[in-house]
Amino acid sequence: MSAWGIRDFRLLWGGRAVSSLGSWLLVVAVPAHVYALTGSVFATGLALAAEYLPAVVLGPVAGVLVDRWDRRRVMIAADLVRAAAVAVMLLGTPAAIYAAVVAESVGAVLFRPAAQAHVPAVVGTGPALAGANSWNAATDGVVGLVGPPLGGVLFAWAGFEVLVALDVVSYLVSAVAISLTRTRSAASGERSGFLAGVEALRKLPLARVLLPLGAVFLAANAALTALLVPFGVRHLGGSAQVGFVLSALGVGFLGGAVLVRWLDGVQPRTTLAVAQLCTAAGFAGLFSARELWGAMVAAVVIGVFGSVTVVTPRTAVQRLTPNHLLGRISALFLVAEAVATLVGAIAGPWLAEAVSLHVAAMVAAGTTAVGAVVGAVTVPRVMLAAKRSNEQADTHA
Image 1 (tube, rainbow, N blue to C red):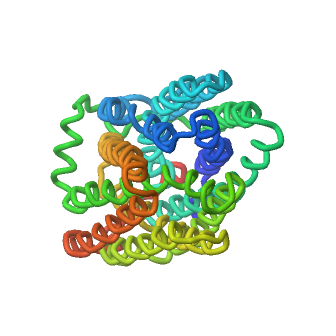
Image 2: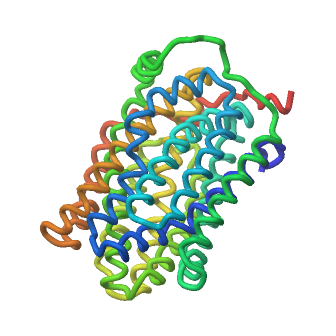
């Protein structure tokens, strides 16, 4: 609870929670709307691919800017950009939705590395950092639990336009919450560019190995995410059932948030290998299910261990990286994530239409399992608990 005692973290957390809920309301509605308009699995996958294209192009530049600018102002501006972008979806056509998703992602490209670099500046790099990341993971779980079914109900009852309007408002609320926090500049005044972040990554063996392993995991995850709505419509009964499956993922994320905190002192390679293998098993179980209950059980497993797989490397990188370079290092990870997600979001639906949806899902699950085995061998043996800084947040000074 140490992170929760810091006012600025509470504001950051609150703004993130509200904007995340707005986005989760659309997580089923956007692909369902595109699928209803086009009837194409591939076109549905493109909606996910469009989200990650700006990160591939703009990510390196964003990381440099985040390390030079006031990160608080960057996050506020990014929320305003995303609010305006989501409003474009009110036009309702596939082209407008693709354009809006791309523009919204431009804002996210700036927001995410700024937020990841800002959290250690607010809470410090000691135990409060793991607590902060656990709180954020728990928030993802709660929002993932509530958002999809609520979005599904509102989509059926009130229509796509109402969900879009709610998401716009959520970004505005987030901007206001962040504006109430204290201003903190980058950790140093250095003006070095993107290559300084690459050089810093080269000197961090753990981060250097985690980057490609995380990319493989996220590529497989993106392929399966792109297939989930068509799978649910074809085999589980419709978009409402997809919402329940996503809610089960949220339940899993709640459990994963607690598990992450308990595993904070365990060697990362052990944690990641076990978590990825369990996630792969969950993927295989989900896309083999023909009843809703079976899919939901598998989704809980994916949520628990997928949360561990994502949060553990993030905490490690935040602890090991000097704060004045953290924006660039975070951007490198986000670029790798974007490339991997873009590849997965296109490859999964393409393979599903070329062969079958089930084969595409099993290939992605197998890729996740292989990544776990490789990680068990290649991730350096390092005890992060022993490397924690006792540095306190400046709010405690």
